[in-house]
Amino acid sequence: MPEFGQSKRRRTGQVVGALLIKNPPAAEGNLLEEVEIGWHLRKSAWGKGYATEAARAGLDYARDRLALDRIIAVVFKENERSVAVTKRLGMTPRGPSDRYYGVTLELFELTLAD
Image 1 (tube, rainbow, N blue to C red):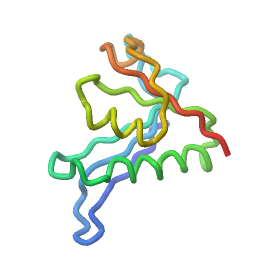
Image 2: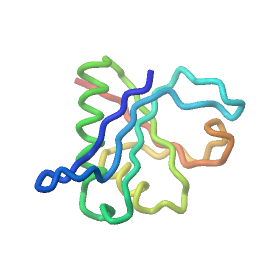
Image 3: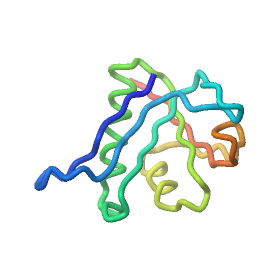
Image 4: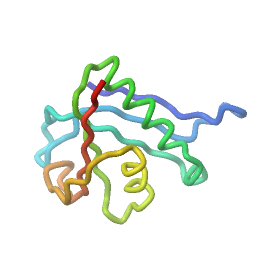
């Protein structure tokens, strides 16, 4: 169920990153039933609020269009900027998990209430 979007600078139209909403793979590679939100930005776009802005729109889409009641994010513990985004989004930290992608990641979750 991949859903992808691009984040652009409004003034220039330059693509600065992508937002994704998808079923993440388990360590073995098979897709899980859970749904993940994630963001990837070019380094020059870091620290400008694009990830948070895009993720908020993605969460609205996940709740309103996909009718999801729960979404997760998984990030490397060392990726302090992405951890900060999950906090700004109101996601709850659930600790380290090796359930996704075959590596240990920090798991965050959010209940999407109306």
